[in-house]
Image (cartoon, rainbow, N blue to C red; front, side):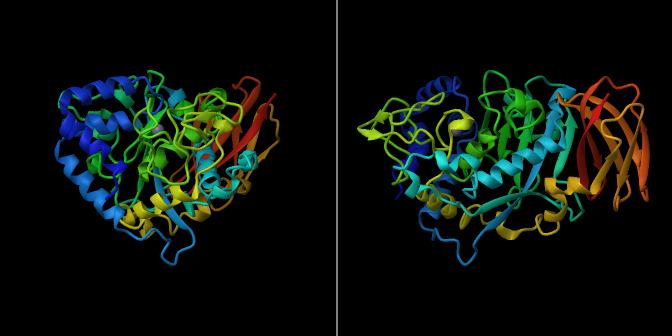
Length: 422
Ligand SMILES: [Zn+2]
């Protein structure tokens, strides 16, 4: 039995509701709300404590190897739920987040070499990749991105009178999940309160609410996220998806104790979170703290690794309670058209442009839209294109001078490019 992993179960079950409320209140100040979410959900739906325990048992008794697979590709659906145009982030900002995930989870992150020598032997390629879903739950082609306007400010922390979080339900102003057995659902919405995001540990949320929620200001590396230093490098999602795969914060649940940890053998016991970008080494609980781990609270630029021990936990999850993600249902047709490299198929000229812009498009399918945003995410122009369009003239004389993102979406593909306006 996995002692440490039991703590969410024990804390609510045997310490009583006051503990749960107190714990949630304390954690409400945290930039990551994953632990507070567990307490809220257990209070709202006590049956989840049984489900979580069942999941913990299954994960504890599951082989942790990749079972013949080298790398698994996971289908992602991004639900962009926005009140303002600013929150309606661009496709390219979403692509930038996928790039970060595919670097961090494959140990291909540019700053991996900044891991202190003490810890470099522990750094792990998690052998997990992420792609935007190419097929929706009904079997139709999709971009893997769903957009919905909401009347609610900061919907990410709002609940309906019946206690359900609004973000996860279309009828409550959010957007319904796609089948969580097969898709990693990511909701991108304003949260507020200094909260960057939260992710659901396996078995701690109803299926309709299973996934991660990230504020658009901290999602990806471009557009709106580019301005939000030090959380501007897309590692909020790296961290929250870690929770989704059952990784705890590196210090454990108790932020003031050396008596619990994250249940991972190769991460040193640590008293509590580190913030900012500490100078190595930092001593905590008699160890050199691994504050640069993705599951700490340090700045995006200062996070560098998952460990081999964390990989073991992740694969125990993937091989048991999240095995459906490996079906590849949505990924099989998507890789070719969901990656940023497809931007090469879009030609914009002249660039920079004065009055008129010519956009050449290859193989555009029916139902296309062309949209132009500035780098803050403000929409300036939208016009239908295709099918069969090869080149389209766009009057950009009304745009101010500056740099703009041009995006083209159709039923089955989306492309983007940058151009200058003079
Ligand atoms: Zn967290």
